[in-house]
Length: 180
Image (cartoon, rainbow, N blue to C red; front, side, top):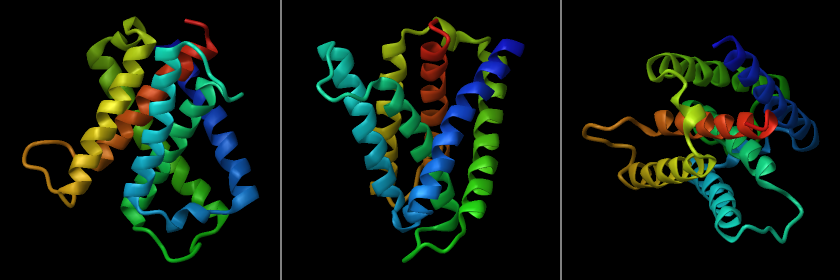
């Protein structure tokens, strides 16, 4: 588990660094996005990953790694938006946005650590394409929950699905970064 924690912290650091740089470039302009738009952004990214996996080639000079980082960051933004709601304009500072990012990332990774304990690192034995399919499945679930105005009868909510999407993307990033 010690290696897992170090690997998670490493890939989270990569994602956070890009998030912080984009905050400097754009500010928290994403505050205007509704959660449905964030779900669609994640859908676009995971669909592209699946397309590359199926076709075996990419015509755009951005690989799977950058899309996975995007899924992580949009998933965390989704969690922020679920709590704060969307805004009509940027209503938080970059520092506040980064603090929210850190809080929701901590919650998300703590969920992974708890599940990882129970599942005994089964994710390391999964095929990388399964991460893609699991994220895509979570996107479709989230879209259905959104279409139902967030109401579920027995299922986890949108927040749990965003956390799962982030964690599957982090698993895939670990596999890429550490050539597992």
